Length: 113
Image 1 (cartoon, rainbow, N blue to C red):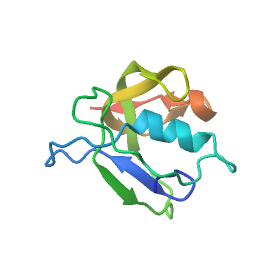
Image 2 (image 1 turned 135 degrees about the horizontal axis):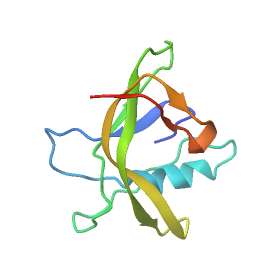
Image 3 (image 1 turned 90 degrees about the vertical axis):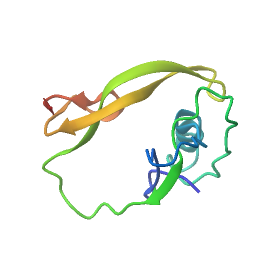
C-alpha cells in the first residue's frame, strides 16, 4: 500500500535495476482518495512501460524538522492515463534548504550541489 498521508512512499533503489512502479500514476490515484493521499494498492507496471520509475516502498516517519531535504531539481512531463493529463515526473533529486512557494506548486528555492 502506498500513500503520503500514512508515510508509505515510493523510492528508486539504484542497486535494483527492475523498475516496477509508476509513481505519478500511483500518487495521482492516492490524491483522489478521501481523505487525500490515503493508501492505495500500487499496481505494478510492465518492463516495457517507460513510465516505470520506482522499485521500493518504504514506511517513513515524519518525526523531525529538517534543515535540508531532497527536492526535485530536474523534471519532465509524463502522460498520466489515470488522470487523463500530463504530470510532472522528477528525473533527478538534489539537496535543498529553502522552500519557495506553497502547496503543490512549491519548489526548492535554494538548491545545494
